Amino acid sequence: MAADGYKKYQRAFAKPPALVVEWHDHLTAAVGWLCIDSLRGGAAGGGTRMRGGKKPEQQGSREEAIFLAKTMGVKFRVCGPDIGGGKSVIRFDPAAHAKDKSKQLEIKRGVLERWYAHIGPYLKSCYGTGGDVNVDEVSEATAIPARVVGILHPQEGICRGHMTPKDGEEAAAKVARLKHGCESRVELADLPGPREGAWVLADVVTGFGVARSIQRFYAARQMKLEGQRAVIEGFGAVGAFAAYYLHHMGVRTVATSSKGGEGFRVAIDPAGLDVVSLIKKRDGNALETPPKRKNASVIASAKGEEIYDVEAEIYVPAGASHTINGKKIKSLSESGVKVWSCGANNPFRYDTKQRDLSSWVLDMLDLQKKADKKFAILPDFVANCGMARAFAYLMSAGSVAEAPSILSDAGATIDQAVDKVLEGHSRNTGLLGRGYQVYIEE
Image 1: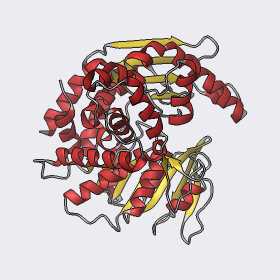
Image 2 (image 1 turned 180 degrees about the horizontal axis):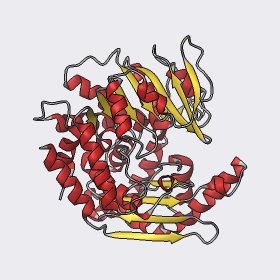
Image 3 (image 1 turned 60 degrees about the vertical axis):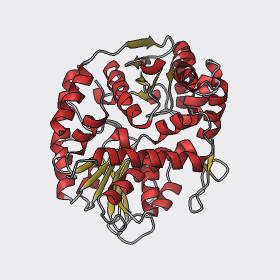
């Protein structure tokens, strides 16, 4: 069954996308691509990311937009709505244009303004976007299109192209509910947020979903979750809130990492990190302040690979895409890891010297098959679909635009998706292949 899933995966990625729009900024070196893999049900959806750097693997590309658009199509089979996959990728590094952080932010937002203006007709009619790598959900992916395109929410195109014809509710009502729901307050008693003491749904929902997928897997397999140890790669919003919600499930995060400057910051505590303190003391996504605990440390690291040697049962890749190689798979296995929950999209590495999509897919498949034989891997299109599910829920007539209702719906959707992957599959390994077999449509 797993082999059939991998074959479906390879065939799906071999098909050409319906549309790729390429854009070259006239004021900077930025290049952008909007890929719509298919206008299934009259619409497509997928976030906006911005990546630049000196190395090829750090730079956004046309191929990346196509790959991610296809991945989004699979995710929508899990969480709805019944639409096609899309993606916006911008190749640009603001740090290469200015040293001052405030100036970098000004330049970056100028690029985003011109990008969203360029794809404005799609955002108004059939394409919905959101935040992704280096693009904030609220202050950039929502606020900038509202200002330059005249839409109240970046999912408006899906509301008009797919949801309104489906249930008859006016698009304006859906858009208003989306805006309110994504920015609805999440108050955490032990973790005051930066927005008047609270967080918003968009801050927490993806990390919540990653933790929920682990909780459901352990419950379905009748395994004890409390007392398990987790290693979390990446401590941005996804990794931090996966750690937070796992902490409240009784899971100890024993190691985590974050990108900072030219290298990484790594936090390790075999007894369990104080994740609430770490979140409070982050500088952006970076781990800056050592937790005041015996045997705990925050260290500077060239590659951040120290986390893979820490003994644990659970691994959450929640940093950049394409970080997992054969060496890391071996280290995680030797460290005792049994379960993965993929907070990052497409965590498996490919040869960056190859620039064609088919080579990427073959490289990733090779690593996926190796990992799938060793671990119980909850796929990215299940584990990190919380934000996409929130959008789908809020577009539906009768949904409640408040955080408790949205989180409850996202949790139930992830529970059902995990159950569907496990149904009729007695082994804990082979879940990636099984997930493709279940959710990829041809």
